[in-house]
Amino acid sequence: MIKPDKHTNIKLSVPYLSAVSLGEIQRNGIIRYDDLKNVLIQKIGTGATENYQYALSFLYLLGKIEYIEKLDSIKMIEV
Image 1 (tube, one colour):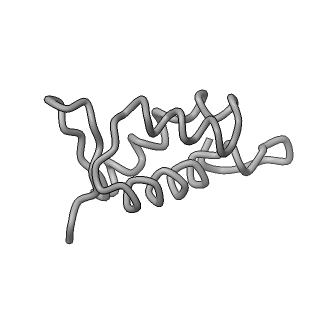
Image 2 (image 1 turned 180 degrees about the vertical axis):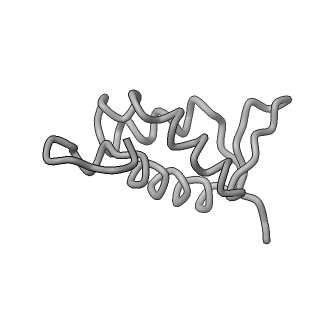
Image 3 (image 1 turned 90 degrees about the vertical axis):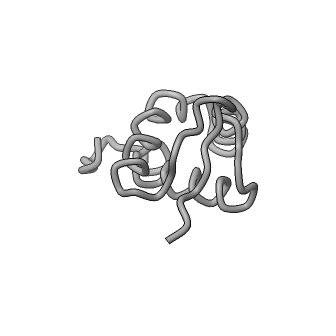
């Protein structure tokens, strides 16, 4: 769902969710997986849960975030 069509709600798209997620991760430093999901639901709505995992995978593939398994948290990779 990276390429939008006429029925795509931009606020529920993978790039938009990725941008909002990255902003929250940057603001908090390290944020728990579920806490980030809850923040997105509060900001965007329950439709955000559908593409949440895709947005995180997108950021991971771009090398922007890393997952800390011990803490079940996500942090930004410093470049």
